[in-house]
Image 1 (spheres, one colour):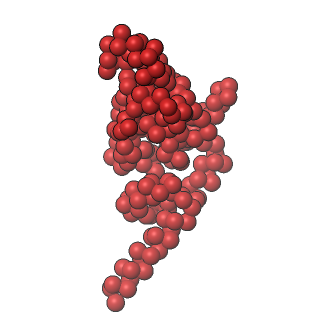
Image 2 (cartoon, rainbow, N blue to C red):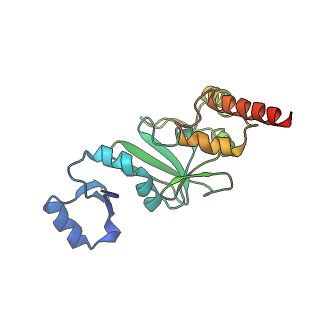
Image 3 (cartoon, rainbow, N blue to C red):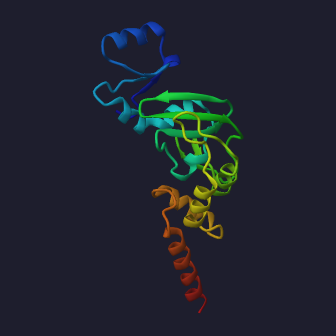
Length: 192
């Protein structure tokens, strides 16, 4: 099934109610349903989180603490969008804060959702935030930010390395440095 997610505004309320009663739809959250009734709702959400986020929070940018992983982590996904809201889904909670939408350098990660560029992620994570109940602070602590900045892509790396790194498990330590060094050695050998 390509996209098992159905939103309340896609069908009349009576149709959705009838399909839920017949067991053809499973409610994931208010106004969000899955046609994949055999699968675990948490698995459905983890496969389709980009489609859900882009529909509920148009032009959302994965930012703050979540920019390190480029996906939900530790039960939360922090995004910047046009509105402030919290959306509880099976498996994790989306926390949206008001913030600028897509900017130059942000990376499209699918279904209209973008990942904040590395400079944006660094800047966004300097904003002080607090833990709220069980929810971690939206931004990294100073120590976490320092650790991330020293193990992620060097600021001198070409932007295409950053884009390529996001396709992997998002900026693995040492990968970008090795890639940059190999490109430099190829350039120097080409000059000879």
